[in-house]
Amino acid sequence: MKPSLLLLITWLTMNLTAQTPDRIITYKKIGDVELRLHIFNPPNHQASDKAPAIVFFFGGGWIKGSPEQFFPFCKHLASRGMVAASAEYRIQSKHGTTPVECVKDGKSALRWMRTHAEKLGIDPHKLAAGGGSAGGHVAAVAGNVVGFEEEGEDLSIASKPDALVLMNPVFDNGPEGYGHNQVEAFWEAFSPLHNITGGAPPTVVFLGTQDKLIPVATAETYKAQMEAVGSRCDLYLHKDQPHGFFNARFKENYEKILPQMDAFLRSLAYIKSEE
Image (cartoon, rainbow, N blue to C red):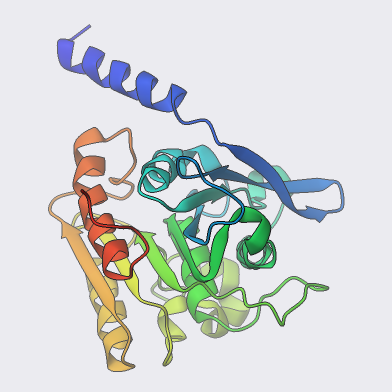
């Protein structure tokens, strides 16, 4: 085995074994399906605290994926003082669902976090959402699109996040965008790119310039439209990187993204400056 490969395997093993959630809580039941949040707390966290929080949604084309994808990000942000959760949501391969159910579950997870803010020790007014690829779409829809809420929930409690952290997200569900054939009948109401309005949450986006699924031009258009309605959108383009480049298994990329993500969250007072 090559030394570089051995070092990578060792690094991944050490990090993954250290990434055990502090709590795993069911936030939603649909029939016999239970959906859970995998929650990482800051050191010495108490229910009486009011820590900023974030919920991440994994990628996988609304078809597959696992919340473990964002455990490294959760662990990192918990070390910086945030309550960080990675959410399960319904996917086609396991539940026979469509992108609509993915979005409904994402909004349910955010609403559940706000509903239980006092027990979780979080600030309900500093609740971010994040995700990669289709999970980035789930987060972006929650931040920008009205509707697609689960029936029977208390809609007086907002599902809209206060900030967004997006990795090569699916922005565009239009005729030239990703997944259009799955949402063709209602894409105009479902596509984040086509539903940006005033009050859109401040957003940071990470995208590889060689992403074959999410064109750079789409991200630049999203940024321009956000700024046109007076909202902030920080765009980090990572040269020559493909779709999914941000994942922790790509150690060099992951370590480049962390300070960029931290700078964004620090500017919103979600995390403190390093001592």
